[in-house]
Length: 196
Ligand code: SF4
Image (cartoon, rainbow, N blue to C red; front, side, top):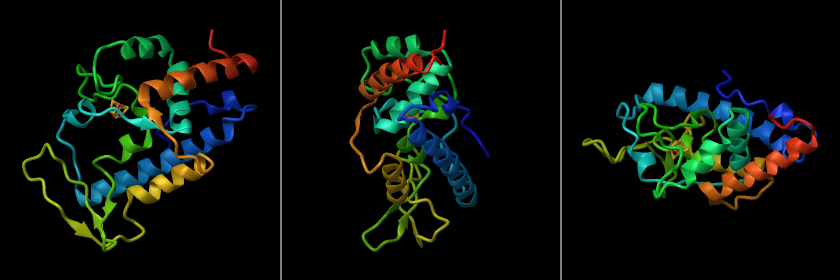
């Protein structure tokens, strides 16, 4: 199922196109993989919680930042992004306290935001540690066999690295997205696809 509705074709003749297209396909795969796993293992966040975002500012790789930048450009929310960045907060600027869904860029959020609380990590014996919630009273560590149908953060992170051409350098969210917006707006202007 395609959850993300970004029109990456707008950047078809640019150097960003292939990696954005690959990321779009990858995000759809991750979304399906996680929702099947979470359903099977009954992994659920507390409804309308948002505490993870409220205590977190993600770092982003280049392609993740470009994806969010394109989403903000195509949804006409670039000004909103820059004004959110001016707020004196030390957590993600896209967190929306007033909405039960909280993430205001949900279809475009980065990989760590998709994996957090949903994917497993590996312990030193190679077993998968199921995600646990620090905000739930019943938090506990549970391990399961790391079979191919278990989403493992490090494996999915390696796929992101491939999409990024082996580059896993990151920048803080605000900085990464600001730079990506400026770059994509320039590219869209050159290709004649800039939003009016
Ligand atoms: S991008 Fe969305 S999911 Fe990620 S930290 Fe920000 S508000 Fe939360």
